Amino acid sequence: MPLPRVPRQDILIWRYDSSGTYSVKSGYNLLACEFAVHDQDLDSSELQRFKSFYANLWSLSVPSKIKVMFWRLSKNYLPTNVNLSNRRLSVNPSCHLCVDAPETIYHIIECAFTKRICSNMGINYLTTSSEKNWVLWLATLFDPLNVHQRLFLVVSIRAIWSYRNNKLHNNTLQSEAELIRFIRVYIAELTSHGVSHAPSVAKTAVKWTPPPGNTIKFNFDASFDSLLQSSVSGVVAQNSDGLLMAAGTTPHRYVANPEMAEAFACEDALILAVDLGFNRIIIEGDALTVVNKVMAGTEERSLSRGIFQNISAMKASFVDLKFAHVNRSGNSPAHLLAKEGKNFSAPMVWIEKVVPTVEVAIQNDRWWVQRSD
Ligand SMILES: [Zn+2]
Image 1 (cartoon, helix red, strand yellow):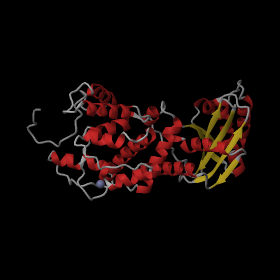
Image 2 (cartoon, protein in one colour):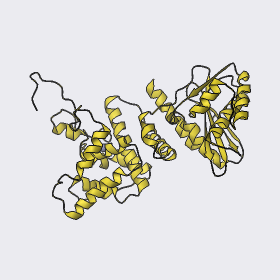
Image 3 (cartoon, protein in one colour):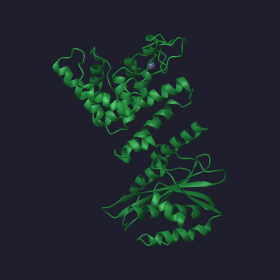
Image 4 (tube, helix red, strand yellow):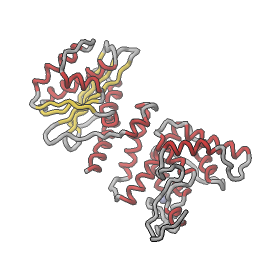
């Protein structure tokens, strides 16, 4: 590599892509040829464990950026403080999280802070392996876990690494408890949205945004059971500080399709707003066709006709009413509540509090709101 004539600051370059920047595609490609490559002097059983470690990692149902981070960890490609100081970049080699030991690649896993967070997630692991090969050392810890535990571990390590980076670069004030909540909600969302959505959700991670001044935002969502032809609406109302005003769930029977379930949820949001006497509101949901239809207000010719007519009729009850569409990732409290609502056979209303999982999701949104200030 030619040296510049004038000293310049070092930058990190991803050498497996011509642009020099990391892309998931180049990561995949590199990983794809990984197995073809010689690898140190491993015997056949070690090679087998090596391969199964990567196969297990790659089969996890998490967004690829998370797997890639763990894969970079396994390759010792992370800019740990020890790695940086070995490259003569003047950094303090100690760990930022426990300030107790040099931050080697092993320490990323062995750190007391990491272990404490993972233990909170129900993942306890031993780091007493005598393996000299780093990947096999990691495999000794990873392989005995079941698929769920591996998912928890990989997500936790990635979140801890981001937390560590934020602490290092932005001086973030996020607490350990907030980090734990963040991981819990992330995993809850990941497992409730299903695998196929995970990567696209991650890419367009839209966060809930607070309404202006004296307006209350009502987020709605529905869970639909096609077998029982039933649905549950979840509605969460928050003010401009992101504080929970009220929440409600409503079960419905004879629901023909998901669109009808969402239309019911939208109607339930308006009913709750009327009941509580809020007259400046935003009604927000992730069902694009329903939101488009209520905004257009044109005559509806589907099975949900009656619901759309009710919604139109209720518009007159408000001084200021807006409808908005948000991606699923910006609608998680309502989404989770629509699922939780299955536990109740009658409609429920909560004022200034709600079931714990939904409160956690609301806290999480507020954390994002505060961070983006
Ligand atoms: Zn540490």
